[in-house]
Image (tube, rainbow over the protein chains, first blue to last red):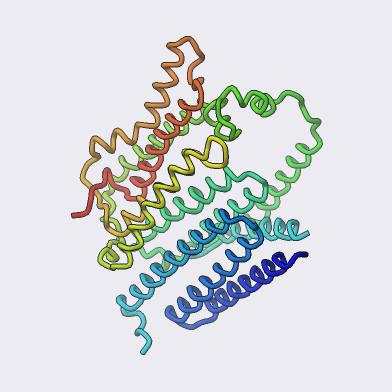
Amino acid sequence: MSLSEVMASLLLLSGCLFYVAGTVGLLRFPDVFSRLHALTKADNLGLFLICTGLALHSGSLRIAGLLLIVWILGLLAATVSCHLIARRAVRSGQMEPPA
Amino acid sequence: MIGLAMDCVLALGIVFLAVQTVRSRSLFQAMLMFIVFGLLMSLSWARLHAPDLALAEAAIGAGITGALLLVTWRRLQAEGHDPVESEQSAPSMWLTLPTAGAASLLVVIIGWVALQLPAVPGTAGELAWQRLEEVGVSNPVTGVLLGFRAYDTLLEMAVLLAAWLGARAVATEFRPGALPGPAHAEVPLVGALLSLVVPISILVAVYLLQAGGSAPGGAFQGGAVLAAGGVLLCLTGRLEAAADTSGLERLGLILGLSVFSLVGLLVMAGGGPMLALPGAWAIYLVETALLVSIALTLVLLFAAAPGLRRAS
């Protein structure tokens, strides 16, 4: 196993760990805001680690560039949908925003 | 080893989600289960080395169908039927277990018989594979869809048009309310996201169409991606329902069917068999027309409106 393969595996594994942490947070946290916090932050980092791991594994600049676009699009969609969900939760008055 | 484990997880997950979709007491939960079911189906097509089907299932099965189901749920809620509250009775175990058992047994018997059959030489698939060059594209899926089974594809477009006409007839009778969701219209982040994502959806749709000649892709996948951009514009209040279908929309709806038929008939006038597309340029022409019609039909179905116009 070459060094880059070991690095890629480590990155993929740690990415999966972040996904698991985000999912546990989504299932266990008590309200909308802390759930969103767990999900979007952990998953964005998890996606970054997995994309970096895959880019390293592929060893091709073109695929690395495509994975970068995938990560940026994922980030943008997660940010805006998180904002909209939190906004709706505040507006509908079901939840008090965190102090 | 890891591959086998993943296949087992996928197979068990699909059966579990199917059971949950049928047995779920809340309509909303059943919808979510069905969307995730479509996602797992897409993954299993990818595992079976059928990337074309995986793309189509992800874009249409999970994406557009999911959006249609969720918007229907919102409309039901807006009209006062709260589908979360109305608990439907789950089917009785005495009926479901024997039915599921009998169906599984049938699948096992059919699969076992299929595995026992001797391979027949010269099946349609082999013949199509050998003569793929004559169609003019190197992706066998596009070649079969537009070269060897053009009738099927043409009639699929007719079915799509008929589905829209049916939905329109029903919608005139029941008049579904305005699109739920434009409450987000004024959020600045939404405008910024749209100005990036909608052009990308057009770019990806055109790329999928162009790639369909030599790699997984094609009019149906591209049309679904383009429709996703349109659905976003409807959801964020950039497009709103119009009272009638405009001339341009009518043209777009029938474009696929008419260009396909016209090219097919012109070939016949030139002495060839009907719908035998003469080369790659004809395939790309027909696919472009199909893409426009598919995308427009899906967006209009989502909006449940006769037509759409720019929000004022």
